[in-house]
Image (cartoon, rainbow, N blue to C red; front, side, top):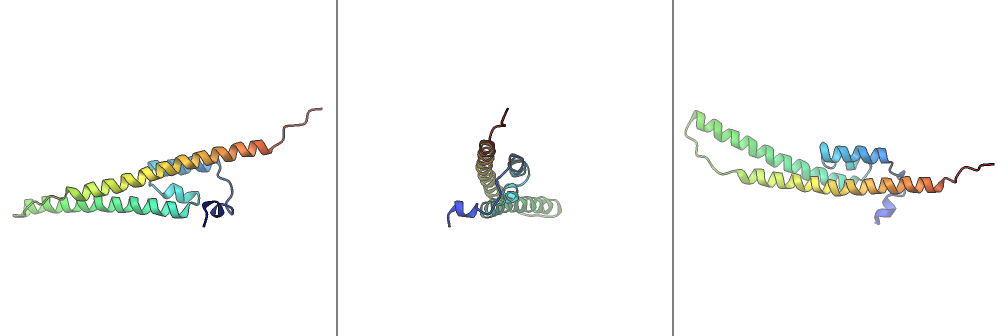
Length: 127
């Protein structure tokens, strides 16, 4: 299925909707802003990457706290777990970068729609 055929039933993207999607994508959760403007497949992909990255970082944090608590209460061997944080950070940065590229595309599409809307309106008739 062509991407253009997926866009036929959607209304044109406004600059306000694009701005809001960019803000949510880049400052809150990658993928959520993309979902807000109706890009389902891309938005879900970005969101899955971001949540997976967050899960790895959270897993690293819990494992680190377990080791610290184990050292306080008993004799627990410390094992390297930095790879969890590195994978999680990499996944989240990949999701953020993907949402950045998508956000740039959304802003460009909104500008094209605005320009096309102004071009479609005839100039006023002065008598």
